[in-house]
Every structure is written in C-alpha cells, then in structure tokens.
Length: 291
Length: 313
Image 1 (cartoon, helix red, strand yellow):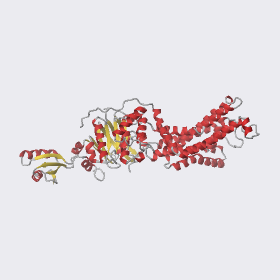
Image 2 (image 1 turned 90 degrees about the vertical axis):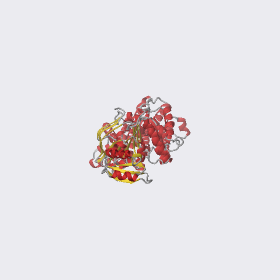
Image 3 (image 1 turned 120 degrees about the vertical axis):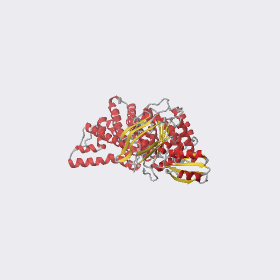
Image 4 (image 1 turned 45 degrees about the vertical axis):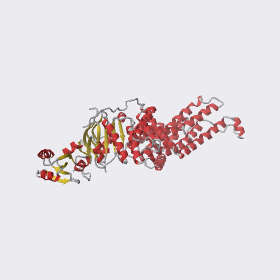
C-alpha cells in the first residue's frame, strides 16, 4: 500500500453556466461549416435574390429612378404579402441547398473522426452537443432566410412614400415565423440524416431525398386513392401552404387541394420527433463491442 | 467512502454480446492498472465509469458521484480515450483550450491552464501546430494534456503509453507516479506489462468480460496458489542449495542463473520454502546474499491467470 500525501488539489474555481459551454460547440460548428469555399460560394449565391428584390423595391418606391431606367410603368412591382411570399420561398429553397451542404460537415466529421467520445467526455450532454451544432446551422440558415427578408421589409417600410409598416406588420411576423419553422426543420433534419450517413456527399443527397422523395410518394398516394391526405408527405407543398397563411397571402387559384393548418403542424412536429429519435440513437460515445 | 470508485455487481451487454459481467470492485486513490487481452472489456469498464455507456445492471459510484450525472462527473474526471481522433483542423492549443472552455473555465483561466498542461506533457513548443501534423506520440500527449488540464480528481487513461517513444513513455510514467503519489485516482489500461509493474499500486485483471483478480501484484501472485512460485536466490554455492532444496518434495524446478551466482527455484509451498531456506542459511553451508521472488510481476500473473492466448485458465 502506498503512502499518499494527499496534497493534490482538484480544480475548485468558478465554472461558467452550461449555456456558454454550448457556444464552444457552436463555435466549432461555425468553423467546420465555413471552412469550405463551397459554403462561401453558396452563401453568396443565396444573397443574390435579396439584392435583386432590394433593387426592385427601390424602383417601386422611386418614380425618378424608374424614369432614369426608362420604365413607363407606374409601379415596377407591387410590394405586398405575395412579394414577400415569393422572397421567402426562393430563400427557403436556397436554405435547403445550403443546409444540405453545411449539416453533414457539422456531424459526419465528428463521427468519421471518432471525436464524439472526446467531446462527450466533458460536462456537456448529448443534447448540448446537438444544440451547439444546431445553433451553427440555424444561424447560418437564418442569415439567408428571415434576416434578408426582414431587412427588405424594413427597407420597404423606410422607402415607401405612404405609411406602410403598421398596416403590414403581419407580413413581418409571418415571414419571421415561417422562416424560423423552416430553418428549425431543416436544422434538425439535416443533423439527423447526417448522423446516420458516414459519407458527406451521400448525406447531402439524403437531405434532398428526405424532402422530395416523400413528396413523390405522397403524389402517388393522392393520385391512386384520390385523397388530399397524400400531401401530408409533401413537405414543399405543406410549407408553401403554411407560408401563404402566415403571411396572409391569398390562396392560389391553381391549387386544387388544401390541408388544414393543424394537420400540417402535426406532420412537422412528427418529423421533428423522428429526427430527434434518430439523433438520440446515433449521437453517443462509441461503444466498443467485443467481437 | 467518498474517495473511492465503486462497482457493485455491474454488467453491461451490447445486445447479446457481453461487455462485462457482474463486476464488483473498490478502487482506492493511487494508480490502478486494468490489464487484459484485446476485447476483454477494459474500455467498456472505463466507459461505464465515465458514464459514456450505461450499465445493463449494477451500480457505479465515482468518488461519491453517479456516472449518469455527467456535468458533475466530468468536472472532477479527466478521460483520455484510446481513439486517436480529434475534431478536424484544430491545433494542440485550441484542442486543450476549447476542452477547458467546455469544462466551464473562464477564458483567462483556460489560457493559464492550457499553458500549464501543455508544458507538463512537454508539448509547449508544438502547441500552435495542427494536430493533424503531429506524430502519434504527440497526439497521445495532447490527449493526456486535455485530460489533466482541468485538474481532475480522477484520471481515466485508456492505453496512454501506446505510440510513445521510450523517453516520452518515461516522462508520462513519471507524471502518473507523481499524480498517484499526490492522492489522485488514476485508472490506466495497458498492454505493456513491464510498465504495469513499474507504475501500479494495484492491478485489475479482466478477460472475456469477467474480473479475474484484483489487488497489489504481490497479493494477487500469492493468491495464485496452484501455480508454483519462482524465487531467485543469490548465493555462493547455487548447485548445493538446489540439491538441498530438491530434497523437499514441494520444490518442483531448479535452474541455475546464467552468471552461476544464483539459482531459480520453483516451489508449491512458499511459506514452508522460506522456513527451510532459513534453516539452510543458519547451517552456514551456503552463503545467501539475496532472496527475491522471480515471478510476482504483472507478466507472470497475466500468463498464469489469463494465458498467452487470452483465455482465462
């Protein structure tokens, strides 16, 4: 038996709150996401439509500028809920492309490098790990969805010759809510699928497939059974309906089917639960199984 | 009993595969080495202790804390996994610094502790380089640095000496011994049996998920009564001593030392052996210079209890 002097002193200093530790993982996430030139290229591409719409809003509110470019129309475009719906739709599909590239970088690297046991051997939970990564993804996607959308709304409010913002505040709240729902769904879907696919490129494809393949299945179900409920598998269709309602834009005359908002909400929550279960099963320190 | 690590009837099954089975252990402060062949359940035991896997049954307490309480546990525990893997693209400094930030240190404190731990493992000069460019030994060291950086009370090291050159190995062993002497818990798994002898206060032998033996190496060797013990006796007339000892029926093997100044004797009854040796020494026929057990080391225990093929005897 050794004689122990017991003069070792464990750390007894102050500890930062748990939420600040999550930000360390978010920082890792940002570094992993933005270390690729393709991410920067995609991000730049995502910002092109808002720039075009910014120019459009400028022209719509400035007769002199319209005259300078030789436009004889009294209004270049109508700035209303329909315009912001188009902006939200375009930016949301760009966000899908961006998430399919970024999400696999956040998780598959750690899985491929076996870095989870090291990261989870800290006072941070598996939830904290996923939350930290999702902050990085959520923030990156926000920058191309609701942030430019609200900036355009603010610019329109500022440049409109008539009081506009107060009467159209529902557009801003709808745009924010619609984009946040989409970005949250994309974040959890992207991370869940990335955690199950070892190869990054395959994970990118899987994210697109998870959005569009069920939509195809839903269309078959709708066609064969002649029921609208097949559209509950069609994420693009459901989101389009949801955005339209949140922004208060009129329903499209060409759409034959509609779904109750409650059913859409249930399906989105269900998708999130499935993704959470996938993450729960996969995000854990590697267990060594004896052969 | 809050300064001990306690396993109470702990089992872990991965589906139908046995990880460890009904392990009961009490580990006091100091250096405890886990010894066993590949796939014996050493890493499972460490993962159970650190809460990275949950036991199928039984209870574990690490200095009074449950491993399921990971935020509290990892504040007092440092774990150096066997995986040679790191988050991508980071430097040694960032790895240790970010680890400390995850531990909840303030930035100022994290900087100070990062410098201290990297210097402690002799990695101060290479701290700014990317880990991807490190040698295997350097990667082992930086993992060790992050495990000790936050001054844990318990240090769990899975194969920490793998890949280290002799110099680095000696430095690491000196560090473990220093921490063990100071009263820290060190649980180390190792295949390098010579070094297990040098550093361990206690050994835990495990194979096939079953606990085979635990205690100090000498205690364990004495418990293995069915294997005759080998003793080296340094003396001036080894052949005479061997012949006298062979007159006793429990002396089963004698072998002269290569330098002719000693004899290895193997006996089935060590207590009686020493008593007879006393008698021979008192007679004065043989001048005995030294007596030392020749097979109460980790390697011999491993051979006797686990066997060279890894199956328990």
